[in-house]
Structures are given as C-alpha cells and as structure tokens.
Image (cartoon, rainbow over the protein chains, first blue to last red):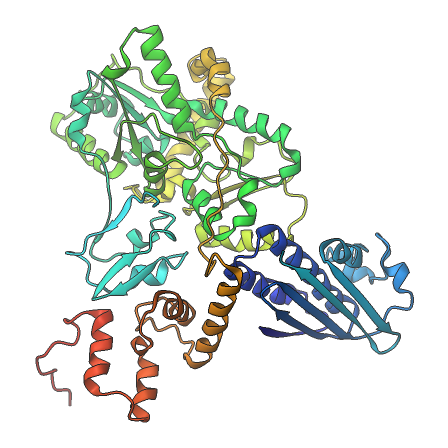
Length: 137
Length: 457
C-alpha cells in the first residue's frame, strides 16, 4: 500500500498531514497502539524537519502486512555531519523556527528512538533523505 | 454487546439521515428507510437525538413507578437539575415537589465533588508517568477514547464518578446511621444525558452499579414543574434539607469545573465532542507537550448543555454560577459544615472509589487478523477511487469512505451508490428496476412510490 505526500517549505500548518493519515491506516489494520504511536511520532518529526530545514520535499510511505517503510526526502542544505546531528540537543534551526516551538535538536534522536531501522543519507547543498522502518510484530 | 441508552423508534423514524450525518463516530446507517445504530461504534453522546426532527431517537429510562416500590426512595440529582428552573422558583418548592412525587431523600451527586477530586489527586500523585491524565467524568468521552483513541485508554483516570461515590455515601448513611435495611432503599439517579445512563447500566471498569433506577432529567423536570404550578404560591416543604453544595462542587460539572481545582501545572478543559476529537488527534501524535491533566466533556458547556437539559445551556450555566457565588460567600463567612458532610466517611469512600481501567475496543480495525485487515484495506482503497467523494449519503452511509468500508466489511451492495448506478447504466450493465430496488433498499418504498410524480412545468 503506497501513499505519497508533498511537504512545502515553511508550511508548519500542514505538519502532521502525512503522519495523521498513516495513523488512520494503521488503526484500520489493527496495529498495536504503542507501535502506531512510534510510527506517528517518528514520521511527524521527519515531516517537521523537512519543513523547517529544507526547501520542501516528499514523504513516501509503503505499508505492508508486517511493517511500514517511510522515506522523507527533501531538497535542502543537507547535513554536513550526520553523527553530530544525531546527538540530542544539537540544532541548527533558525531562531524563528525555534520561536514556533520547533528545532529543539530532538528530531533525529527522537526518530532513532521510535523506529527499528533509520538510515540518514545527505549531500550538502542537495538534500537529505531519511528512511525509516517500523516492524509491526 | 455494549449497553446503549439511545434507541431509534422505527415507527417514528422518517429516515431523513440527519442523525447519520451528524454522528461523530459514524455509527448510524440508513436501511429500508430507517436509521439504525451500529452498537459497537455508538458512544451515547446523543448528537443524533439533538438532530432528529421527529423525536424518533429516544433515551430509555426506568419506569417512574419504581420510585414507589421502596420505602426509602432516594433521588440523586445532578446540580444542573436546579439550574433548570426559573429564578422565581425557590429550591424549597422544588424539594417539596420531589417529596410529593415519592422521594424520601434527595441528594445532589456533586456532594461527592470534594472526595472525587481527592481520589483523582491521589491517583495523579501515584501515576505521573501516565500523563496527560484524562478525567473519566464524562462517560461519552471515555467511550470515545475506547473506540477511537485506543492508545490513550491508559491515560484515563480509573475512578468512579461522583454519582457512584454519592451512592456509596447515601447507602452508608441510611443503613449505618439511620438503621434502614438495604432492601428498603431505592437509589434513583436523575440523569442529564444518555451517556450517564449507559455508564450506570454497563459501567466501564466496574462490575455493577449501586443505582436501582434511572430517571431522565427532562421527565422529572416536567413532573416537578407541574406539581409546583398546581400547588401555587406558598407551596414549600422544609422538612427535607435543601442542599448546600460548595462553590467548587456546584461548578464541577461545568466546563473548567475540574480543571480550576486540579493541581496540574498545565491542563486543558475542552467541551464539545468535535473540539475534543481535534485535540485528541493532536495528543495522539505527541504534538502536545507537557500536559498533565485534561478535562474533556462531550457537550458544549458541559452538563449545562446536556442532552436532557430543558433549559438553554447558557441560562442554566449562569444560574449555577449565581448559586456558586452565593455558596462562596457563605464559605467566606465560615459556613462549610454541610458542604463537607461526606468527610465522615472520607477514608471509606476514597478507598472504594477506584475502578478497573477502561479497555480499548477500536472501532476502526477492519479485521482481527492483520493480513486480512490489510487485504480489506486494499479493497477499500481501490473502491474509494471509483466513488465520487461527495459524501452525499444516498447510499445510506455518511461518507464515501464509510460506504466503501461497509461494502468490503459488511457486504453492502455497491449499487447503492447512485453514481455507480449511472456508471453501470452508461455501460448498459444495470436495468432501471435494479436501480430502483437498490435505492429503495436504502430509503424504503415511500420516497419513490408507485404513484405518478407531480408534473413540473
């Protein structure tokens, strides 16, 4: 089952569109609530990242009977040092983004905590792709 | 199955579909020209009851005659009951009428508000990890969370309602202090809404309720009001103690009533079922941080706007505020004795006020088996592409998506969709008779009778 969403730069009002829709699908499938929550939290973080840091991007979701595969690919500045970005509290968010309550430097670490597989690939000046897998059982 | 207080009178139902359109959990369908409620989805919020133009949706109650079967009948009133009456009708007259109608004792359930708050605080202190804690005060909200937000059931504070605490208190008082045998006591709850009836008849997380009967607030209001009008001026009865609730207790059933006295650093009071759902959607996504307590009520203006309220919600609410202001005045003057009368049994009541936790029972899950659910969802998604997404309701389901789900999960015929019918007609795949039969299966025979339609020029 494939779902696609477009993320627009700076459009925080629509942060959570993809995660809400995925949440509904997982509830229909009867996936355990704790797992649904992990998926939703991770995907929401990834959506916010693409909105806050990049010039927009795409969310590609593939749901199978035993797992969910999510890719959030943005066009943006990229991450020069991924290991550093994975540390809690490390943030490059602009002040105006922080004022909105985002950019506390918990994004990637929070995704890491909630998913079974996390792959972050990035090219400076081109963009970042976050790939996440959560198993249902 | 789950007990529901709301029922549809098929004789009165005109199959207009207003209830189907308004139901927040999409629990209503139209078939053969009548509405019906899907029991596993209904939360007894009563939105359908409000929307029905012909009063075909009614709220089951016990026979009022039961009140006379007990030597010691007790009316357990919600505080909003007194808020129903115009200002010129004094409480003593209302109590006189209640006495004449057969109640030997009258208590307002909010007498238990202080103990109820203490029980919640105790639970909150011991369960900081489960924050945000959600009040279980409104039974429609508890049911909503059970079926639509299963991941949040663990956040519901598992305590009994003020009603149950009052019932325990009254039983203690009458049996132990006044020596009345239990079997002579009949506890009657005067309910402002359908959800509270359902909660009494089938308590979430409790085995059995102490309540012997439920009386609808609007029915009692009519009886009392009539009695007062018949008796004229000078009608009053002073042998029954009139209530003396604390200001906090009076306000507890209104919006912010619990929140204003909760100890949480950050809390929200949200009323109106759509507002509650919008908030819970965000909460479930972890988009709301640092919330410690949530007061959620299904009705706009909480119990002042309850389904069985006969008075405008704002007029009722203001009367309760006026009463609370007077009570606050008395409290400032040091008169608190009767407002804390339950404190004599405080320890016993607190100990017995915890309930079993509510369990999730998701209405959204398509199949218990994940791979079968997956197959169904694929079919539903495919079907949705063919449906017009106008949510016209002609198929007897509230939305195209709900219809697609019914087709896949309940084997409802796809030809019920009028757009799909046109599609088949275009392909010469359906006869006019078949179209008519499909539409009649939803709306019955009447709307498309066999007579000639009127000519329109």
